[in-house]
Length: 354
Image (cartoon, rainbow, N blue to C red; front, side, top):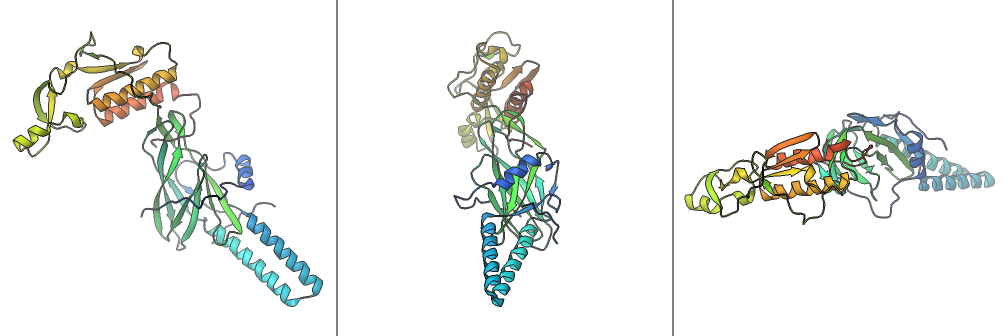
């Protein structure tokens, strides 16, 4: 059966449907292969008669067979009421088709962003579903490739729903968003209306860190010559006002309580400036592959950030000076994620930061 395409006249909550429901149909997979690039968009994606497809579900096909049997019986036995009932039920099916289409028509999907995660983790990606019409939309489903169940969204009239869905990640670097399937079987499940959405925005995925337990490199002095002993908790040289990014273990809680200070105080460690870490690409054993080296350095960055110590990162062609705090950690992880083009020639499906 040819597909039918025609025009019809706050914070959201997405929830998976009951277990056991099929996530894709043959018709959806067939059209996905037939139209691989048609639904790639940069920015907002509006659903219209040009990009919504409608086909009967399995229940709809069974319904059509029953109507055909009723029509044959009415013709055979010349039943006037049989004709009336058959055509009435056929009209119900046709009206249902238009309602199914209208449940998606004129909706606008606006891509959002997601915070970076490490490869292999699930990334929470957000988008805005805009319904500018006066008609409430029910059970709009968003299906993500690689997940078992679609997300279901109800959208009141004149609303903008911020919805968050989980996306799988695989490869580090700038990764494209997967092609999403947007569909609906509202109101009675006889028809399936669907479309595809492939946002062209790319997202950042951090490298997968090596297992914990890898020792950090030795600290170096500011000139980079030789090693220096990092300060310990009992080697306090001075107290200073707390700065954003200071590690919690550097906060002088006892001094704050004793002095009755209005703000937090941080400890300056003895020889603190001589205790900076240099996370150097050439300190990684040469027998490891590029991805294994990146994984090792990712573990170093995570452990160095947890220790509260200043650290610098050196990669071939890239040098980040010593610093500390969440922003410096994010810069180092981003440099590792994008090293060499982002893991492979083609970034895998995944997500992190838009």
